[in-house]
Length: 542
Image (tube, rainbow, N blue to C red):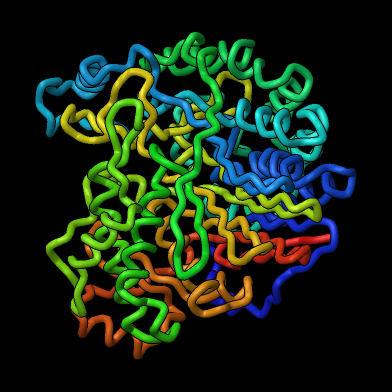
């Protein structure tokens, strides 16, 4: 039975705390972050502990076999980014992957229509960045090491926990995904996914977490877990090696930013899709979106049209910058020129773009933390689409991501597969400076919903001066690859009708299609946080 997300008409208020606040998509994970804050950790410690706990209590969206990213503002006033995102194996060329897939499917490897990048299986697995990312975060900014920060996750994995409602529904969808006995034994119980409220333990994952707590991230990239990952991928016909894993390093790129009506918004640079959000905000500012009331159809129209041109540009240009130059999509000159393409009617001449449509509805977890020292952290951890590739590394309990599904086997595609290359990445944590001493870490989950959610949340906060909880609760829309403008059931009927008259192909979708969201804020020393009920979210403070 699917959870009835329509029954949630949020009556929540914004959560406040004196020493720290944590907002996540799962209550037990929020408790893990609060536990670390109470023990003397800071926001970075809490982010790592919370992310690790989510790997256990929300394994349907995140795991050690995926990637992790951060945007943050430190107590010293520095704004920065962390990227722990692996690339394709060194031996994974277009030709070799085509030949492997063609042999499996008994088709012609030279026929582009017959062989496409798969969404699951060994060729969709890229080097996982999570463990190195956790360790790098703790080492650079935290008070504790992984030996302390992984303890809540280890406890949940070993002692068990009750599965929450939305996660149980997502888990059921994975019953037919797992390709090996090891995968099924790790995540199914008597061959079935758990039901809501069922108590489950993940002992194999717990043992891996204990090993990482004792030996550090090297256990994943150079030790027995690395051997299990490489052996599992190769046994199914893939090209991942221990050398691919051992060569992985965390990056600290400069964030990209843009000012929107006085607020400075920070995003991750390429290979992530943060520039899509910034370009759309720039176009929206050029179009004067802030002049319209929140429930005005013109506001939704111009924001959606701004995102339409931003998606077109982002999917045309954004790729791993080590392999191709990405133009300044958020620069004033660029957004002025793109704003000229937007008019009072829906523009059917601008396409969604050429990125991988399989990423449209992928899901993830995002958490936000703020502490009384002045740190705010947005932390996002995912293996792309649910349980990822369907492969679990040996007896480790670590499900491997399918982020490589975003590659193309067309050498002319901007996101074409190349050895070592990182795929176009949907994950984008966000940070915004709303005032002189007013900083917030935020994010919206769900594939191509992420930049659309960023734009709507920022506009709600900046243009409409909404409280945090209201800014997340407000009904959302999303522009889709099909050209449809999807809206939530609680969207105003009059506004929807007027959008149809403006030429939009409006469709009503379940609230679960519009992503969860989290935000944590430090405003002149007052800590606050919010989440919203499109997932099993909770915000807590102390």
